[in-house]
Structure formats: C-alpha cells, structure tokens
Length: 336
Image (cartoon, rainbow, N blue to C red; front, top):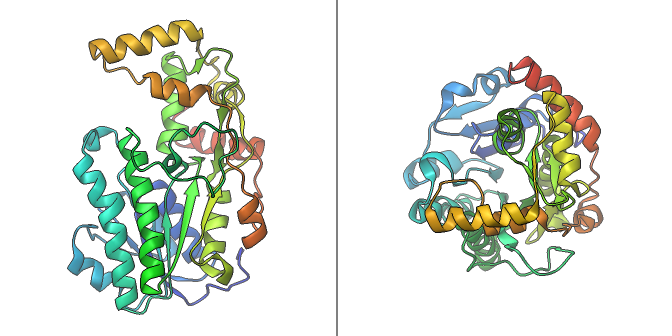
C-alpha cells in the first residue's frame, strides 16, 4: 500500500547505497509500494536480489566515479543519497575515504543534480553530526560539530553543512535527513551487532543503564524520507528522525528477550577503568571514554520539526518494531 497515495508513481528515483540497510529498504518500498521507477546504485549487487524482485534496476557505480554518476543522475526526478562511509571493518580509521564518501560525493551529486535538472536531492546525514553537545534537547537548530574527534560524525557534519550551502547557492532543492539509531530487519549495527554482543556475553550496559538510546525503526525512517522528497516546505531544511528515547536497559532488554539471554552490565567505575586501559594500552576493545559518554547521556533528539513541516508521525512503536525484528532474526537463523 502506498504511503504517499501514489504521489511518487512513475517518478524516476535514484537511490545511492541501495545494497545497504537503509538504502535497500528505501529502494524496495519506492518500487514495490510507491510505484516509482527506481535505479539503485551499489557495489555488492549480489546481495540485493530482493531489490531486483521488487523491480529496482541495479547499477554498480562507485561514488568516486563522476562519469558513472553523471550517467546515473541524468533523467532522474529525485535523488536519495544514502551511501556513506560508516567506519568499522575495512573502512576503519580512514579519514581520506570518509571525506571522499561523506563530503565530496555529496557535493558531486548535488552539482550533477543541478546540471541535469533533477528536481530534488535528499541526502542522509546522522545525529552523529551534532557530536556530543552539552544540552539535553538536541534539535535541528543545534550547531553541527565539524571538529569532533569521531571521523564518522565529523565528516557527516561537514557533508551535512555543505549539502545545504551548495543547494542554496545553486538554487537546487536539497533536504537533509538526520536519523538516530536505525534498527530493524537487516540492520547490521543496531540489531545484528547488538544481538551478537549479548549472545557472546559482552557487556552492553554500563552503570545504571538509564542513559538514553535513540532508536528509530527502519520503516518509520523511510516514511520520513518519503515525505521529505515530496513536501515543498522541506526544501533547504534538515530533519531529525528518532522514535521516543528509551533507557539502554530497555532497548537492550528487548534483544535479551529475543536471545533468551540477559544483557551483561558493568558498574560505571569498572567501565571507566576499562576505557582508560583500552586507550592507554591499545587493547582494541569497543569501549573508550567517548563511547562511554555516548552510552550514559540522557539527551533527546526531538522530531517536532518533522511533525510540523512534513506531517510526520512514527507509525511503528518500539514494541511492534522489536516484534517484527525478532521474526526476521529467527527466520534468518541469527537467533533460535
């Protein structure tokens, strides 16, 4: 069923990062539910058979290939730029690649969109672009932290600012989306990764576990992204997308129930000592003082702007989102 009452039917839509988690679900819904004519860009097309089944045309175009991007962009009505450098694995500690994918590629796509008469570009940033501001309510008026130590957050902030600056300068319609922690079926970071940590007995809760998690269910995010593509009042603006903030013990508790294993907790003082030792002795643990601060903060990322400007409402509450996620995890053999 179409979320936008077929407003995108017949529109030519390009999705970068279509073989990834967010881009894949977006491309699938655009083609299968909204009736759009979708082209998906990605590098590992072998894992995207579900997109071909939905009617998505897949092309193996690298974001650093300007000629290939020009060909892909030409004739499109809307571009969703989802592909990004996220860090971890083979991309770990590579600021050069991060700049190329999170900043330069954004600039290139917006410039090419302007040159080829694409109506609108929706580019995906992140709440990580805000850094760690010392305030409880982090809305879209909060300045982005372009000097933060975290490579992902820093380059997302730079790309976010540049997208809106370049769009305004060229007169190209640009909208920026800032998702929180996107979970649900196929989420590597905030579903599969967390489940594996709990299954392995790795500590995932620190101190009282009452620091905030900021989950957003994948289809809630896609709803918001679809709205940003069509609402004329969205042009030049940025929007947070986050479901209701919940304590980490609540968020991890759902995964613990799915796994049948209680999430492991560390006292805060122990975690601080471990984070210091990790930094000092290069232990390679996924814990440092910045991450500990992230896991114990109680900030919120309000979505009033999206609700007012776009008419956005989160349709899938956390309990239902976790039920859907549990079904997928079992069907995928990731939990019994």
